[in-house]
Amino acid sequence: MSEHFDVHGGARLVGEVEVVGAKNSVLKLMAAALLAEGTTTITNCPQILDVPLMADVLRSVGCEVELDGDTAYITTPTELSHRADSPAMGKLRASVCVLGPLVGRLKKAVVALPGGDAIGSRPLDMHQNGLRKLGATSTIAHGCVVAEADGLHGAQIWLDFPSVGATENILMAAVLAEGTTVIDNAAREPEIVDICTMLTEMGAKIEGAGTSTLIVEGVDQLHPTEHRVIGDRIVGATWAFAAAMTRGDVTVTGVDPHHLELVLEKLRLAGAEVTTFDGKGFRVMQPDRPRSVDFVTLPYPGFATDLQPFAVALSSVSEGTSMITENVYEARFRFIEEMVRLGADARTDGHHAVVRGVEKLSSAPVWASDIRAGAGLVLAGLCADGVTEVWDVFHIDRGYPHFVENLNRLGARIDRVSSAGDAD
Ligand code: EPU
Image 1 (cartoon, rainbow, N blue to C red):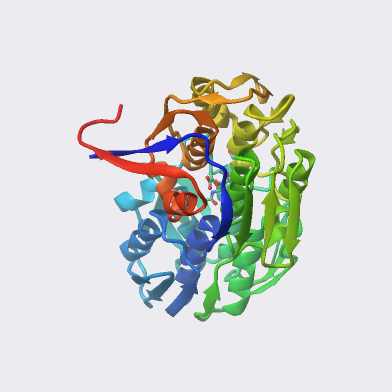
Image 2 (tube, rainbow, N blue to C red):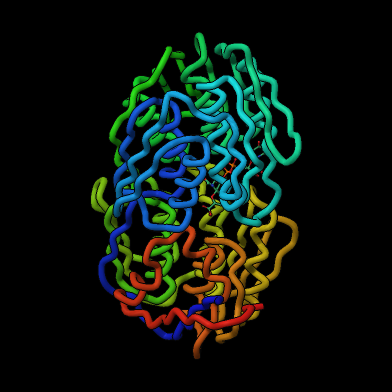
């Protein structure tokens, strides 16, 4: 059985939408629960496919996990397995975040190489180098990262690039290492601040969260906590782009607008009227056809690579020409091939794309290649004439809770259609 969305073009999105916890935070917070024996409670969890998958990963190393609505209860036993190589591992990228906690607690881990979106090369060299600096050996054998240490000690670690996943894994090993670890050129994403907050609540000693230098003073053990996941800035931004593209008026709650300052500024430049509500949300109203704006993706606080498809989609219906530069994942421009099917006037050259806006897109069958590309195609379909079929929508379900329901409540008309047989 495969599913696709029928997206009816021509909607103007109006109303209010609530954003819940961030996918790219909750999955790491679930992994952090491995660091403390007992029951950790995580609230504001999004109801997306990746959360039960991560629960399966944790169960495979011996945890009990109960998912009850937006709350996850994770009970970590005294005796954990160091082998995380269940089939769930290959279904999402965040599964690799059990590596740091397992090495931290057990001083050894065998962790299957993760899955996740096909958005370009996603090596683990910085994760491994960081663990080596902390005193572990780390190799790749039979499809797994194998790490082992007699004991972990603090170290000075410089990352070549502020990798989100490497920062998280090194951090989660370092909190239980002996002595002081300094992670330089660390990622600064709000999700990193969230995990630092939770680890601190669990008894870890971390300074510098949200800056490029994290200083971790190792402790002997951590204890469980109850923690609320931060709102999903990428989902919040998706609604902001949806409002701008459909010349709509959408109020987004549950997300901190400080996490989206550059995004909201770009939308203002495109002609949107943006109001922010401190710590709570924002409103985006787009009175006229958007004007073209250039976008450059970079680690936070730069413009997120996860939002690049929305930048392309907005540019494709804006007045004028936009240049979009992708600096993080080279294969993310694959999305543009699908946009061209919808009538976008776009071309790529290396890590740049030039998009000349057209008045209206034209409906066609299109295929989602990852979570954000899928959501971007749905938004583009709202600006096309006719009915756009978006296929492989399981990608969207991995990252967006109640995506279709939320869009329909805002005035879109999208049907989820199940059909027997292969969608290809
Ligand atoms: N990189 C290396 N070596 C490493 C690690 C990363 O070269 O050891 C490179 C990557 O190839 C990439 C860059 O560093 O070019 C950034 O990768 P990063 O490690 O920051 O990404 P990630 O942790 O694997 C997370 C999100 C992605 C998001 C990126 C960048 C999760 C589960 N995933 O991935 O989210 O695009 O950070 O912000 O947190 C999504 O949600 O749709 C998604 C793909």
